[in-house]
Each structure stands twice: as structure tokens, then as C-alpha cells.
Image (cartoon, rainbow, N blue to C red; front, side):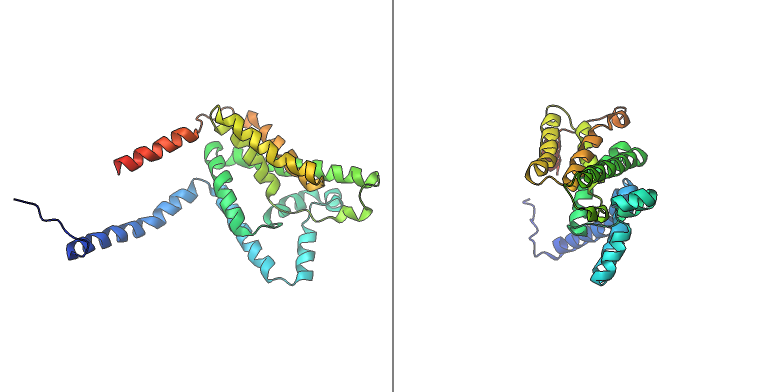
Length: 244
């Protein structure tokens, strides 16, 4: 007997499709929560940044300037109240928009936190954020003392999450297997070095320093096992497609 093939318009086929779609929709919240739970620090940080981004959008320009200025890790605040501004400055975005950082955090912070664990990941972020802030502001202080920058630069606005991000981008070098690791670290160093040549300023110095500090966090990561290879990742995807 020849089997009867069901067409897409067949009621039974439609019902089965509806059941499959409904099942996937019901399982999505659980899958999303499981994904978030594996990198709690990153998503708590993103949630706070979302709130402060909404606040920034709704504040008058003069009030916003005052709010951000009060949280800036400039020379004036680092001399008077360093701990407060080093913490608070990391919860406000300097530019690029929240969506941009949501993507960047998922690409870099999430795999780093899952690989290192929340505590070690946080140490990398803190080392890069604090270290790059002091070194870049130290360079600005030198420029002011030698007449290469105006005295008013002590109040330069300096907020954001980019130093911590740069450090994490760099530390992921140790997650990638050879020979791809060497291509990755070369690309990272080139990306952060080019601004030093194009427009030397304290922010460019900060980003490059943060990347170097991230690479210097090797003692924190050397005990973590497992490397990632793009070739193996592609092969894994192909195998999954073949099975499905």
C-alpha cells in the first residue's frame, strides 16, 4: 500500500505545527532564564545600565551634565572621592547606546564570565577599569603639568564601561586555542593601538592600557581549563544540522 503524504494544508499537519510552535514558546522563558543565570554579573550590570540609560534620556541637558559630572573619574574626583566615582562611573554609558553594549556584553562578557566564573570575571573588570582609569588620568595630569592640556582638563568627563570591556576582550585571548589565539590577540592590540596613532588622548591611552591589563590577568585564568576553536565550533554546528 502506498503511504498517504500529508500536505501543508492538511488539518493534521497544521495542528502538529501549532503544537510544536506552542511548545517552543512555552519553553523559551525557561531557556532564556537558564542562559541568563550562567552569567549573572553581566546581566545585573546590563539591567542597571538600562535603568541609567532611561534616566539619561529623560533628564534635561543641564541636569544630565551635572549628574554625569558628579560621577566622572576625572582628576578632581579621583583626588577627593576616588572609591565613589570609580564605582558609580561604571554604571553610566558614555555613548553608543544601550543596545550596542547589550550586544558587546553578550559577545564578550557573557562567555568570559561563564568561563572564569563570576568572581574572577569581576576581578578582571575591576583591574582593567581601575587600572586604566588611573593610568589614563595620570597621563592627563602629566599633560596638564607640562602645558600640553589646559588646567580645566582636571574636570574632564570620564565615565563608562569601556575600560572593563577592553580588559575582558583581551583576557579572552587565553580562552581561544592556538593558532587562532595569536591572530585574536594581534587583532585586539591593533584595534586599541590605532587610536593612539591617529588621535592620542587620555581615552585612547585608557583603552590600550585596559587591554594590556586584561592580558596581564593570566594568573587569574591559567587554572581554567578548556579552549575554544572557531574550526571546532563550525564543525559542531554542521554536525547538529546533519542530525536535525
